Image (cartoon, rainbow, N blue to C red):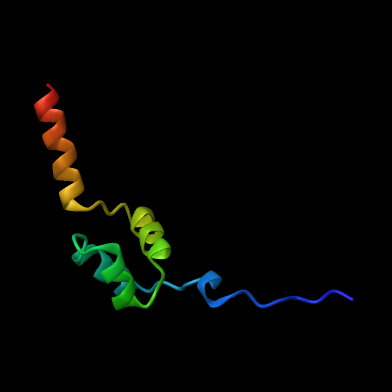
Length: 72
């Protein structure tokens, strides 16, 4: 007899709505931990969803371009 075990809560699939996506876009500079707390989702899902939406942290982008400018 096969039994199916329930996945722990942190492995449950999260559902994203347009409001969540908009919140992530408007608050792109907030730390992952804070976004996770505010949206009640694990940081790994915040990171993954931001990546799916093509959201980069502005500070990371600026740092990247500063390094490119300095090395040129």
